[in-house]
Length: 305
Image 1 (cartoon, rainbow, N blue to C red):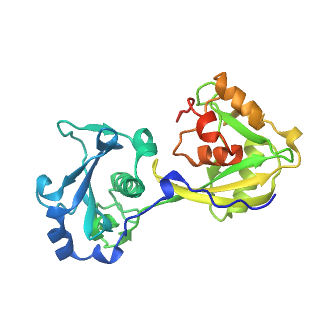
Image 2 (cartoon, rainbow, N blue to C red):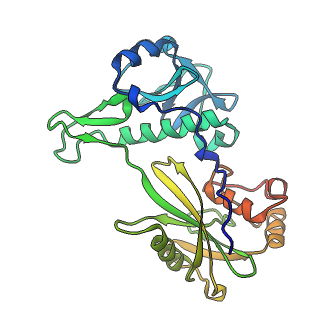
């Protein structure tokens, strides 16, 4: 199996300079705030208008608040922040999840949104020091939390997870359905990297556990953040020489199916197959395998859950 070109993944694009050197510059942060572009995030949702991210100017939001305004970076000399609200709404705006609007966003907006959501989720879930249990405060414009008691610093967590497109020597692909998913919703296989485990060993373990087949000829395809809440998806394709041994584990995976391109097209047409979201790594791997016609023939059926 020849190596493929890395995939262009929807949530992996980034056009904003994170400008880490400015996070400790309080003078810059406060002076740039009035003219900054600010995203509003609350309860896993962004403020939107017409299914696009809505930006407020810092000046319209009042003063810079160092405990819930996180610096995202700069582009064309303009500063970007996200205001993380515990709750609240703004009249005239809709609040929508990144899953709902991600496929329609520009590269600039995608990069800002995944950064903003990952930071906000982490701050919400880590209010206390993991060493002594004391409260922590936001530092370095959202890039760190610092313990008020022992002054230890805590950094945003990212969980590594592999995702793999399993093929056989007839170039069919194997997809599985989790018990918690709706009927006919299938996807590629994925799992978290365990402590002390390499990507390659994780791939072999997860595919064997979930689908019962050995894999070889592993090729790297790309990676993208998946801030739901804090993953980095590392994508691969791999070959199995024993497709006849494929079986669901019965615990997480309830059903598995092999697909040729013709079978997948037919299943989409008769609505017996629901694919993952367009912004997901799984969807992009499937489309890359399917090739010409994927944008028009694999549409209409998609689901997060």
